[in-house]
Each structure stands twice: as structure tokens, then as C-alpha cells.
Length: 471
Ligand code: NI
Image 1 (cartoon, helix red, strand yellow):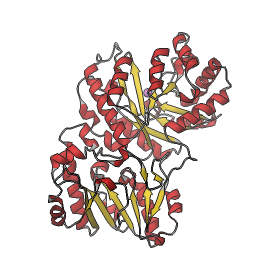
Image 2: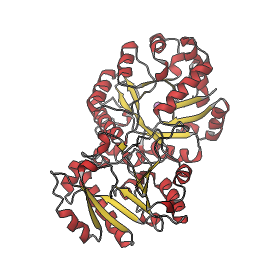
Image 3: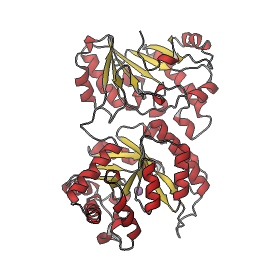
Image 4: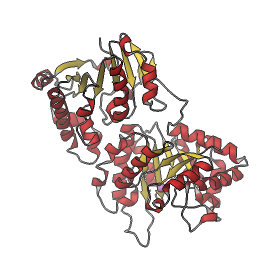
């Protein structure tokens, strides 16, 4: 049986005594792929480390509504950086939960909504599917989703507990339905009625382990291996075999979270004498002028990625780098979000005598929380840094960096951080070109001079030809 647990909390302390055994037991019953849902800033970090250890484990990063008993958006400060990590395939779990728990502070709907809105904005910028947790707050959850949307990458209503009406609204928004242990509970007739109606291509299976065990394990710790029981229950109520259901729901999970190893998309594309490398569609800015809003095409190439390429795939695709004037990391996304992969590929290109250029928004040090330039020495020949304006206020308005989600002044700080990146790159002896999209509303005249002061070259770009290669 091919099963994917699309929602598990393996970093939870409940698994501290036997985490490896739990993952092995899951593998033994066919659960070889899992998505660890985020919940707190600390849990997001812990999950990130686990994904490095276990090849089949992917992560989502997000902050759960329970974390907002009051207006405390500083809990979102680290999230943009966490969304940039390798193997992060979704934003979540986020949402609204108005349930009153006896031993918990009462829910604060205003605080939860503020955090939900900010995280929805990040999902749009990073182009990640959403994992949404809703309890006793369906109308607000849908209203804010519509208000902040559209979300072409969609998402999942995890641990679906609604009836048929809510189902229709979720489906209309393009969302999937996550089904877990509660489908086996004696009182869950309304849920089972909704699940009988849901289209097969929108169902996902999950455990939410260590929480919400199926009926036979109630009161005990839940584990990803228990997803078999969920699969059997859903298959029975839909009148199909568990194997067929497992295959269908796993295909759905691979489609939504872009996990299919056989999907590729355009990883590299050659135009004239340059070869361009398309590492990611995720980005840490939301530029008003970004051509990706209109189209993902560059000449005949569609740069929409069905999944992010691995280093070895790119090295094979590049072949002999000397056949090109240079290898350029760019695409509709920020290549330095995938720093380890970029460095592996650049190392191979340099070893074979090629030239490497990286087109970047210059926010890498802010994203990764450290100076990344020492890692790049000898591997990158030229940085092309998109600064766009010499004015920090204008930068906040037109580039709209993701860091702005947690603090309104972040745009100015990010602008200063990009200038520092340019200065440090020049000091380390890299060739640096500062670029700007020459929009009528931007006074770009100050920029060539500013670039010269920083010791960098300058290249203005025509807005109509964004996404096209330069001459
Ligand atoms: Ni959960």
C-alpha cells in the first residue's frame, strides 16, 4: 500500500523516546512519505532538522492559532526565513480556532485573524500551498481566505470536521480535504456523510500524530502507521478497496505538495549563449512589477515548477558548462533560498571550467541569518542584485519584502541589508551588477551613481522585457 501521511507532528516530545522506531514502523506499513506540519517557531526549526535525517520527510512551517492568545505578531518574525528552507513544501498549520478549552487561555479571535492574515500573505508570496486548521470558525476562515486570495497553489483543510455545505465552499476554492482519525469515531456521522460526497481527487489522508488517534487507539499516542486504519475507514464508506483509495490519495498529495519525482518542469533553459537554471518558484519579495503575476513564460519556456530540482538533476541537465558563455541562476523565484543546492551545482560548474552568475534580490543574509558570501567564494563569478531603487521607503512600497509581515519597518531594514550585501560582495572581490526595473514611477536616476559609490556596475531593465534574457 502506498500511503502518505500529509499531517504529522514528529518533532513533538511525545516521540522523543522512540522517534526513529516510529518512522520505521510507518515505513513498514507503506507510509514512506510524510509531511510534518509546523505549529510554533521552535517546532518549525526542529522539523527542519528532522527532514535532513529522513529522506521521505518533508515539512510545512507555520504558527498555529493557539499561539496567539493575544496580539503578538512577533511570533511570526522567523517564519519568512523558515519558509526558505529546503524541503519546506507548505505553509501551515495556520487558521482559526475559537473553541474554549478549560485549561487554556480563551481564544482571541482578533489576534488569531491578524496572524492568519499575515500568514496567508506569506503563502501568496512564497507560492506555497496552505495547511489550514479551523475549529468553530468556518465562516471567518473562508471570508479571510477569499479576501486575501486567490491562492492558485491551494491547500488543505486539515482534520476536516465540517459538513456538506462547508465542503462545497472548500472545494470551490480549489482546496483539498484532509481526513484523519475522527472519521472512525462513532459520533462522526455528519463527517462521514460529507466524505462520501467529496470528489476522490481532493481527498488526503493524515494522522495528526501524536494527536487524534483512530477509535481503536483512543486515549493512546497516535502514530503515522495508524493511517492504515484511516485509509480502511474511508475506503469502506466510499465503497472502494483500501489500495485504490491509498493510490488515489497519495497521487493527490504529490500533486498538491509537488512531491512527484516524475514531474519535472523546466529546470534549465538555454537562450542564445547562456544557460539559465530555474531553482525555485518561491520568493522572499512580492514586487509590484513582477512579471510572474502575468505569465510564467520566457520565450517558449514555461518556468512553473511542478517540483524543485535536485542538485544532481541540474548537474546532468547542464552537461558541459563550457558550451555556454555563463550559467545563470535566476527563474521566477529567489535562487538563494536554495543555497545548499545552488552551491552544489555551482561547484560542479566551476570544476568543469564554467562561469557562474547568480541573479538575486540580495536578501540572502537576512533570510539565512548570516553572511553567506564566504560560502560562495570561488563558486560564483558575478552577482546581479536587483535593488530597483536607492530610496528605502520606495523599496518597501514596490519590492514589498516578506519580512514586512512581522514589522512595518522591515522594508527599510531589508533595503539596508541588500546594500550591505552589495558592499560585502564588492569587498570580497566579486563582480557585482546592481539592477533596476526602470518604471515611470521610480526615480532610478540616483541608482547608477549609488551603484558606482558601492563599487558595483549598473544595469537598467525595461519593464516590458522583464523575464527576458539580456543581450
Ligand atoms: Ni496538527
